[in-house]
Amino acid sequence: MIMSRPAGSPLSVFTATAARRFGDRICLVDGERRFSFATFDALVDRIASGLARRFAPGTRVALLMANRAEYLLLQFALERAALVRVPINARAPVPEVRHLLSDSGAAALFLDTTTAARADAAAIDLGPLWRVNVQRPDADWRDLIEHTVEPELLHRAALDDLCSLNYTSGSSGIPKGVMLTHRNWFAVARNMLVDRDLRADDRVAHVGPLSHASGSYFTPWFLRGACAILVPGGQAGTLIETIERERVTVFTCVPTVLTRIVNHPAVETADLTSLRAVGYGAEPIPLNTLRKALARFGPILTQNYGQTEAYMTIALLTPDEHFDHDGLLRIGCVGRPYSFVEAVLRAPDGSPVPQGETGEITVRSDHVMAGYWNLPEATATALRDGWLWSGDLARADRDGRLTLVGRSKDMLISGGFNIYPQEIETVLTAHAEIIEAAVIGVPDPDWGEAAVAFVAPAPAARIDANALGSYCQPLLGFRTPKRFVFVEELPKTSSGKADKTALRRQFESEVDAHD
Image (cartoon, rainbow, N blue to C red; front, top):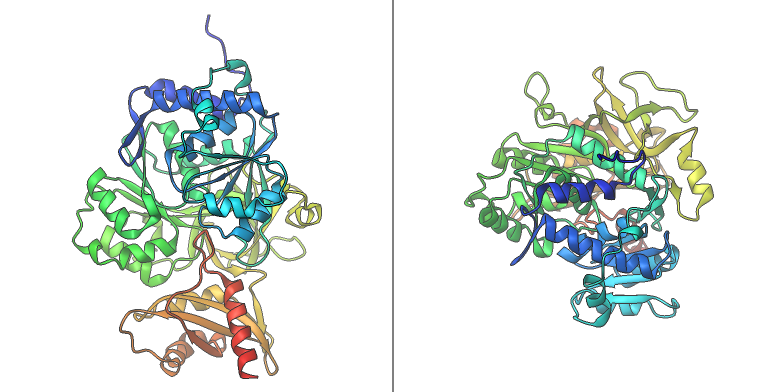
């Protein structure tokens, strides 16, 4: 008798179904290790059974390790065991690791040899914390991967149960734990499967940390029957070598990594003909990087716009929509909302703004977070009447495409005028001698606030502040930064975004030194 699948099944049910469907096909490449769908699924069931036997549903379990197969095995296993995943960037400093472990109340921490020392330092005085090093053949990890499968302990999560606590990047403050349910993750996978060009014969390179967006792409491509290939170290040169060796068809990354790739000396001579798609997102892309990527890879780029609170899938800019009807690049455009996402631009009073005017992006969809972990006031501010107030400001064209102008909290008022840093950054990164730029607002006795631009020039560039000011003035007018600070490279958060908090500290320390 054919049994119908019960309504409201968690995503883990469907990943298990996909594994049975694709069987002996390779789903994961990690160096010399190759995992078939069947082998991967069997390991997941064993690990999940062992975890479910040890911990009650809803227990938080942190993952702190470099990109490796064990991370993805645990990602699936925690979902099947109805436990809550707490992903931590493998490069996060000790204070950040400590905060995430403490704030989440994690009962277990999985790590590897690259993170063991920081894990030990972060866990001091945190109380009982089961620590398992997946690279050590000790009893704990061996018992999990050899545990007897107990089907009655698997796939028990309800759609509205908590699935993960994903912490915000902390680029402008203390990281907040974003509560994502099984329903949220189901919606993320659905959005990608419906609107992204995901194919069964894809060979997908994962160059970014699996603790962030890169790991989230694994599931929808797994459901398609594709093969994931882990790139060790996350370096541009290693990715280029991997594309050649493994005949990679797709990779996705943050603009910071894409900047390194298009400026890497090997990119011009490498055989990259296997690539059919390149994805980028998570922060504004430098215009020079975008132009170089299009010139090298062709019109195969997709921009993905989302945020932790509405994970990854708010809007997308397809390869053809990167250009307008006249063949010109749509600068700053992040595209149209995904098929199952509502996005409305609103004034501070909640009313929708007219087409072409700036408003805050508000989002309603099944992938919007349940709230912030233990932060009811912040949750009430972000979630209002069923809508997520994203904090991102944008304008919409007549076809519904969104063009970002910046974050509401980053906007500065100079001489009575609103200035959005992202608009300045777009102009700066269009300059041939600028690789990347970030703009902050600082107090100013004459203007109220003033824009200060941190710029990283290209090697051998001869640009100076006067020349850069002259370049900006006709393009930006009163928005032209009052000061330019030249740096070798912008500081980054552990997720690869420009760290504007660090830039503000740097500016303040320089001001104090001159006082």
